[in-house]
Image (cartoon, rainbow, N blue to C red; front, side):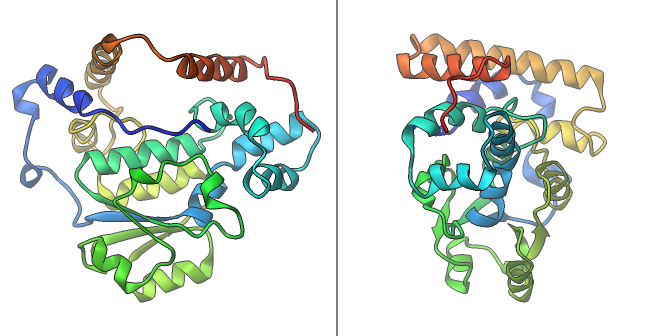
Length: 269
C-alpha cells in the first residue's frame, strides 16, 4: 500500500534560502497563539475526512459507502485500495476538502514546530489499513488519557483536540483541552487555523506563517501569493533533481491523473 511521506528537510532549507532575510523571524516575533500541539482522533477525524472521496467512488460504482468501507478497512481488499488510494491522497480526489487536506494540515503543524498526537482508535475499523503514515505524529496512543498528554509535553490547555463524537469532545474538554468537533474538513481546518494562528491550506516548512501573519489570511496579498507559488516551483525543482522517480511513484501519479480527469480504473464490485 502506498503511504504518505513526510516533506524532506531540503524543502525547509531551500525555502529559507530563497526567502528575504526580513521575513525570517523567530517565534517570539510572530503573532502566534499559546497552543503547542494538536491531537487527532483516527476514527473521529481521519475516517470521516475520507468520506468525500469514498462517497464519490461509491456513487459512481453503484455500491454503498458502508460496503466500500468494509471492503477497504475491515477485509483489507488491496486491489480495491490500489484503485482508490490515489484519490484519497490527492487534493483533487473529490469536490470537497478531504483526507489529503488533513494530512497537509498535520505537516504544516509539525513544520511550525508544534507537536502532533494521534488517538489510534479507528472505531471498529482496522487502523493499520488506513492510508495514513503514523510517523507524521509525534505521539500515538490507543486512547485520550492523561499519560498521552504527558508525552505531548504540554499542558492540556495548550492542546487542541479533533473528533466528531460528542462524548469524546466532552472528555477532552474535561481534561482542559480546546476541543473542535469535526464536521466537514473545510470548516474544521478554518476553526483549527483560528486556534493555532497557523495557515493549514498550503505548506512550506518554516514559511507558511508569513502569509497568515499579514492579515490573518495567507491569500490576501497578490504579491505574497505569487511569491509563495514561485517558492513552491523552486522547491519542486530542487527536490525533484535528486534522481528519477520510482516506477511505483510514476504508477501512482498515473492513477491519480486518471482519477482527476474522470478516467477511472476498472470498477470493483
